[in-house]
Image (tube, rainbow, N blue to C red; front, side):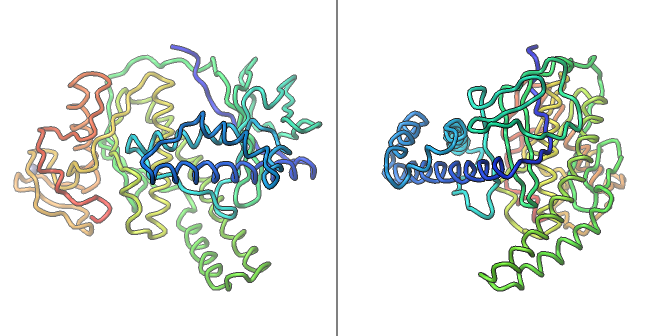
Length: 396
Ligand SMILES: [Zn+2]
């Protein structure tokens, strides 16, 4: 196994000049991304495809025009990188793994710039970006691995105004764990963050309920501020961002601990494949937060599984994990959301979520037995295709 690449993220405090340079860079990245997306979209309506190399050539041409000459003021590395990201977004779209890429908005989109090795210098623990004379004042909250050399550096500013730098490095300290026979199914829910097939229920992070109330209040306040009411609206928006950042931080911390534990304890972890497409319905606040937690959980789980030589199996979302009795295999006709426990004709009384997690585990085991590395898009333990007719789980 090759060395594992790992991102190390830190906060930093830019000087005024650095903050100005980075804000300029974020703006140019957004501009180039949107121009390239517009060009690709325009081609797409003519049933043509524009690739990365073509957008790269466009960038060179844009820089030579008078109205876009300002693109020359910032490092070209992040501009090239955002074209690569757009390429990835289109590859995912064509592969039906993502929706059509969207334009970046000045207020709502993540502000970030990615630098490859030609765009920064890292020496004696000091990181200096292109077009800057001073190194960044980074808060080294945890050490980089011995002798680590970052291959990519991403600078970002979150909606609450905090600055972050993420360094992608080889981490030679990560080694696969010894094999184990243990396997677990994991179900996602609103009442509980996760339910395991072992019967264990894992609660949402502490304070989340209270933070959600605070978030709803801040959002109501923001909604009341008239559009265009400059300073007040800006302040209200910042407040929403702050509460959201607090929720996200606590959640990430919680999910890191959970995923590390699950990966250490189990060889195989079976989860449900909730796709992005499925997640836009029913945008209640709790739902939105739960969806965000789920996709974060999955990505943490997948990369840690790769580090430690474990397997994550995602079972199709059409698989009726809630309606199937995990003891006898009988399929119930319906299972409304308010039903938390139920008794099957075979006499077994089930906790709804634990039953679902057990079914996921069984389905995952069946998939796994078909051969390592097989991850069918639509899997069900006994191959019943009728199961696809189940309505999306979000509505249950
Ligand atoms: Zn039964």
